Structures are given as structure tokens and as C-alpha cells.
Image (cartoon, rainbow, N blue to C red):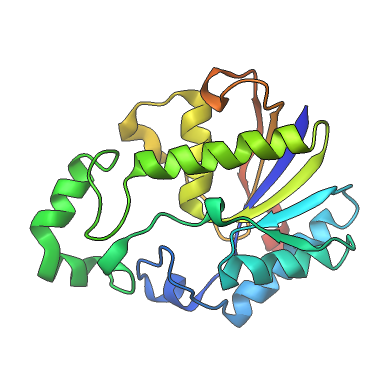
Amino acid sequence: MARFFLTRHGETVWNRERKYQGQSDVPLTDEGRIQAKSLSERLKDEKIDVIYASDLGRTMETAEIIAEHHGRKVVPAPLMRELNFGIWEGMTYDEIMQKWAKEYNKWQDDPFNEKPPKGETLSELCERVSKFFMKAAQDHPDGRILVVSHAGPIRAILSVLLNLKQDFFWKFKISNTSLTIIEYDGLKQLSESDAFIVMVNDTYHLKFI
């Protein structure tokens, strides 16, 4: 059974400004790089067979910092990008509500079937990250797989694995460079599998910065 080490990228400029990032390519802050370095130190003695990262700059840079201890090349994984928030990317909640209140409330009521203008639904997010997860488990049976992604995809993996009601999707707190560990063999669809959740949103390493 493969063991997945899932982490969210380090802090970005838009995290600090509380803006919706989605698939916009927003750089890490200096604090975000420090967070990534702290996680790198935590994982330096772990055996890591392969490192994947969403192909956006903030995830690739976080992964490259972690990879320094493992001599692994980071493999881009576009399927693990954040949810596409469409034209709302770069806006704060207040800015969205000023211009798109009706559309935002409609999306909030049913985000699995509704999408932000020019964005994607949570159903589409869950489908693509599940596809990546299954293939990675099949490609690396019994492997130890590091995946640097975003809060949305990590929530999606947990929600699919647990077959949660749609209302529970947002209940997971996924902090910058937090560690979530899942064991999965890829033999069945994630929702039907015998996968195990070992750890969720662990940030112990950040206490030392």
C-alpha cells in the first residue's frame, strides 16, 4: 500500500491578503519559504520515492525546498491544482460580494454542481484529484509519495475517501505546509477503497520557526 504525504504550499502574498487564489500563479512570501524549510527538516529522514507537485509556482517552489534532502526531481502534477475560481481569483470575499453576490450565494448553496463564473465545480475538482491519486498509487505500489498541493485538493481527497456529505467539504482545516498522511493501494476507486487516514493537518514543525 502506498503512503502519501500530502502538504499544502507555503504562505503566499494572496494568503496574507485573504484573496481567492485558485489557479492564479501567486508567489510564496518569505514566511512561506521558511514554512517549507521547516517541513523539509521534518521530512529529511523519511524515505521518499517520488515527489509530485501541482504545476503552479507556489507548489513547485515548496516541493523543491523539500526535495533538497531527498535528491528527487519534482514531477509536475496539473491534476493537483487548486479549484479554479474563475473571475473571482485575486478578489477578497468582500470584493466578490460587492459585484457577484447573487452568483457567489448560488455557488455556496451547491458548489458541487454550480461553479464560479469561468471556474469549476467541486465535483470536477474531486474527479481530477481522485484520478491522480489512483494512478500515483498504481504507479508506485508500496511507494512513499510526497504530493505538494493546495487546500482544496487535499479536502477533496479526504471528502471522497470518507464519502462525506457535501456540506462537510469545508470542515477540514488545511494550513500552509501542514502534513496529511494517507495510505492507499489504488486497486479500487478511492471512495470504495480500504484507504487509511493516518494524519490530518499536522503543523507540529511550524512550532520551531
